[in-house]
Image: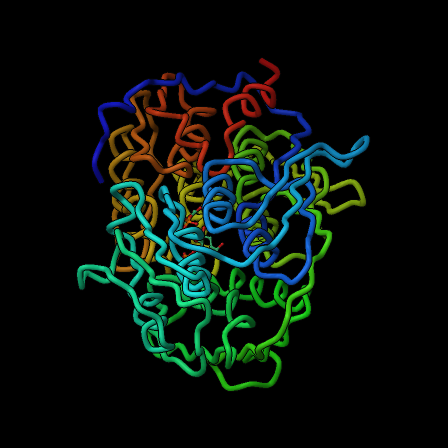
Length: 438
Ligand SMILES: O=C(O)C1=C[C@@H](OP(=O)(O)O)[C@@H](O)[C@H](O)C1
Ligand SMILES: C=C(OP(=O)(O)O)C(=O)O
């Protein structure tokens, strides 16, 4: 958790003078966009992504694929269909250089792709990317036949020496520090000579909805995937080798990025509508309908989207967030404003996210007068009257949006480096002030 002096600009978080009442069009899902890019790049024919998220993480993914020879055309479709990206796959090539920034999806999903390139692919990224776990992907790829130089650290920076193909087959990994290890191997699995069989051997696997998203999206492009849910062994996923189809996919809104707007309705006793909320989705953000209802709101899913209404009261929760870890900062912010204590559990792995999120939330909420303590796997939050001050973000987009939620209810909160929201939602400050009618 280091503060970058280049990023100390302060953004006065708007204070809500009354109940919000707004419709917020939330841009596309980061997790869907980056999976769709990888799958389209590995396909045997061109494919389309409509309404892709355009943010730091997804542009890094697109640039990395371009560096390996994939063509990605960008344009705007006819009325109402928004932007599109057309992905034209090509023989993957090296030498290439990939900047992963601090994107978990880029640093984990692309090394397996790079094993298929016919040359060296060098991976580097932000200083934080050196600290985030990658050993599961590196060790698994080596076991499946890849040559990787990583200075024996099991981390970035590293070079994958693509050999034009990978043998693949069965492999065991401990993915308890990130579900993205499993997703990464499955996404490229159809292109390995023997496919891949991933067996998770460690303690609890986090973020299961994200693994389901990987499986659903693989099946949608024609891959055959056997999973624990489809009658297979627990903790084992098997992908059969085969060609992938190019598809025409419209990306769903990012439901985790809808979180701060729903939270605004909750903490101000107002109403927020999110158009195009999917009726069926693997996105973890869909759990907000249940969690924010328990915390005092109510919601209705209509043909138009999700209508979420706050009651004026905000209650604490005791909830295991292991499946939906990326929702933790926003839930912690709401919990700090509640009328009773909260316990957030199952999220020890957040210590290795964009920043150590458990330490960062504890420090920043407490510096505004809060009473938060870290547990082995989460947070205890006892609400207290808060006061203004600087909310540091540690180059973590979800810390910035968490601070903005608190700022709605507490005067004088200033968010350091709100621009860090560009990782997944560059429009955040504008959408936020637009919601408030400013
Ligand atoms: O596969 C994905 O798109 C993601 C999986 C999760 O990662 P972890 O399992 O590392 O928490 C999640 O937190 C991240 O924001 C996105
Ligand atoms: C953990 C997150 O991102 P990443 O994809 O970089 O892991 C997140 O967006 O909350």
